[in-house]
Image (cartoon, rainbow, N blue to C red):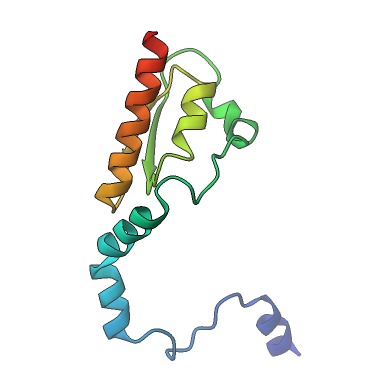
Amino acid sequence: MAEQHTSRILIYPTSSTGVSPFWREKYERDAKKYWDVFYKRHEDRFFKDRHYLDKEWGHYFSGAGIKVILEVGCGAGNTIFPLVATYPDIFVHACDFSPRAIDLVKVQSMNLFFKQEK
């Protein structure tokens, strides 16, 4: 009976028949290449902007002083740009595997900067 209960709450099997070490190492080693191909194909049109984050995380950004965010795996900026639009006093450090994704973020941030200057 206890085994059945345990098996119902197990999310991922613990068997070793998953991805072979060769493929796991290949995917980890070539992650940058795969993400670069992804952003070459989709640019900034795949993920939607996450405008709901201020509702979920707004209490973290309230109060005086500059808040600093580290966005690991920023992609095309679908998380950081809605937050910056809502909380202009935050400072964001953004990084990603894909140089192409970083270029998309740089272009979008420059476009926002020039819009604000006009």
